[in-house]
Amino acid sequence: MKSEKHRELREAETKATYLFKTVEDRGYITAGKTETDLNSQVYETAFELYGIKKYWHKRIVRAGKNTLLPYRENPPNLVIQENDILFFDFGPVFEDWEADFGRTFVLGNDEKKLKIKHDIESAWYLGKMWFDVHPNCKGKELYTYVSGLAVEFGWKFGQEHCGHLIGNFPHEKIQGEEVLNYIHPDNPFKMLDPDKNGLSRDWILEVHFIDEKLEIGGFFEQLLTVE
Image (tube, rainbow, N blue to C red; front, side, top):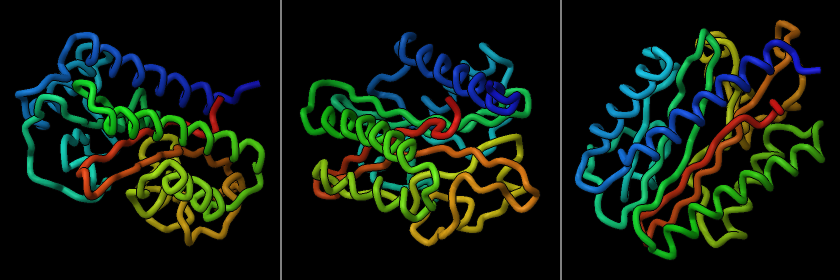
C-alpha cells in the first residue's frame, strides 16, 4: 500500500508531467525566443493550471551550448535556434510537496541531438532497473553505475551527482547540502536508510549527458523511489 507521502509525491510529479505536456502541445517550444521568455511561459502556464508560484529551486531552461552546464551554473541568456536542443529543470511545489522534473526537447531532426535525447531517457530507466535490483545500494554505487552509462552510450557525464532527496517542502533547507543527501560518488550511505530523525527518504534520479565537441547536452529526471 502506498504511503501518504508517496501518494503526494506521485501526484506532484503527475501534475508536473501534465504541465510540460501542455507547454509542448501549445507550441511554446519554438526557435526565436530566449530561454528566459520560455521560462516565463512555463511559469505562467503553471500558474494558470495549478495556481503555482512556489518553486523549491531555480527554474532552468537551457538551450544550445548552455545544455552542457550543470545546475549550479548561471550562463548568459540564449536565443533558441532552429534545429536546437534544450532542456527544462523545474522544481514546482504542489500543496507543500515538491516535484523535480527534467525533460529534453529537440527542434528538427539532427541525429546526434535526437540520439542524446533518446540515450538519457534509456539511461534513466536502466538506472531505475539497477536500483530496483540493488535496493540496499549506497549512493556512490548508484552514481558509479549511472555515470558509467554515459561512456557506454558514447557521451560524457555532465555533473557531480545523479540525483538527490525529494520530499515535503522545503527539504533542501531541512536536509542541508551534505553529500549524503545526493546520489554522489562520495556518499557511503545506503540510499534507503532512514534519515537522522528516523524518517524514510525518497530520491530523484537525474541523468545529464554531454558532448563538449558538439556543444550539446541532454537532461532527464524524475522520481526514483516512488512507484
